[in-house]
Length: 129
Image (cartoon, rainbow, N blue to C red; front, side, top):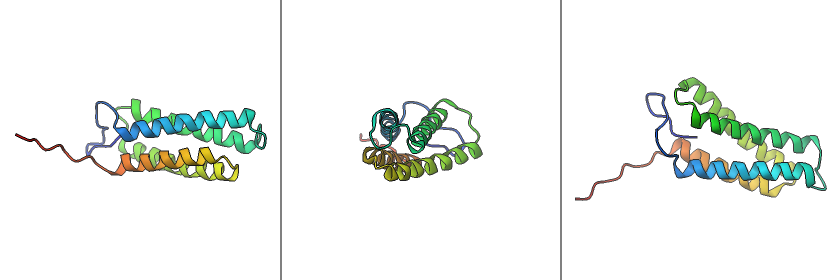
């Protein structure tokens, strides 16, 4: 999730480092959930495994929406941000119950990076003359 400015628009330009960490962690989590769904011995083809595949895919859709929708209304950005936060937590909990430790780790990494990106503003660089 990129930072929302006071005018309700995202910061333009390249994504910040936290955006990349979230994206990589979620893509790896999605790959891991798909592999768990098809090839894991304990949870293959189960409803819980399908649930985490769908919830991880929803996180990917939310992240792409944040990135490509430039004129997103502020209320929609807040609602989508809260739902994404709940999706991170819910997917990590479901991964815990499915004993998918890598999924839990990736969701926690993505959650911390997402929270850092959403709430910590970078300090402006000081000009040294």
